[in-house]
Image (cartoon, rainbow, N blue to C red; front, top):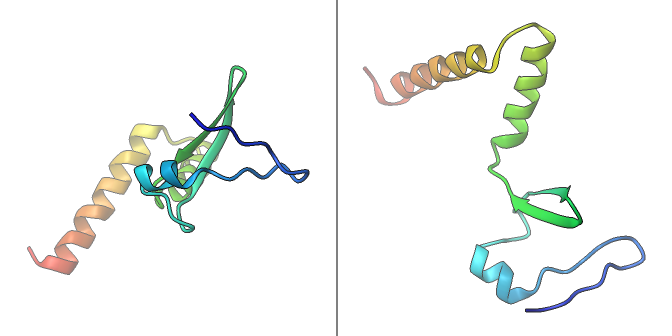
Length: 86
């Protein structure tokens, strides 16, 4: 177990041992949130922010998550066919 303290600007350093074990790099995006009295840092997929943006737009337009997932699947299939053929 290791201990860190936030800087005056609220920054913390994730110990190298933990970064290495989780495969974190300077390009890794982390979701930060409070869970009870804990601060959680969670690596995210590069697609997560895109999906969140699409979900927000879909909700605004009255689409359900299922509608959005069907649309994403249709686009994915189209791209696979375009890249790799029928």
